Length: 202
Image (cartoon, rainbow, N blue to C red):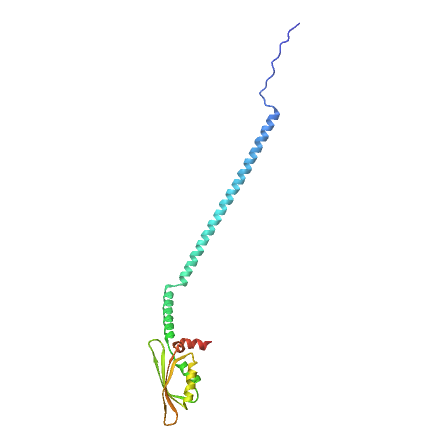
């Protein structure tokens, strides 16, 4: 009986077709993701650079606009004009101070005309400014009788602009009337010119 020699198994180093297709598919998928990511990164970088470039242009334009505005402001506020305005302001302030202290006796005449009884007549008047800012008025006059002087005193007592009034030296004169001397203090604010000006404009 003849002997049978076993044959060694055949060995090949050629990859199988299925393995080759699988590896190639994986490689293509990986390469595709890398390409997409690279394109996205490129687009993002270009967009960011463009935004920065536009912002730089905006800042440069803004800087130029501010420089122009500053030059216009310097022209509008010329130093010579500013100094002139300061001088005018000082003059106005001085005028305000003068007006605030200026006194007019016109309101005093109006006061006595409105609050003096017809049976009383004034013949002489003097007006003196006191150190405390008040003003003293002194007058000579005559009345028809003593009762008229008493009534006139009551009227002045109710006046808010006349204070500390006194009727003195009451005497019967040759005409049958009662002569007297009158003195009183007038509130400073009542005679201020600026106060009268404000009242006239209301």
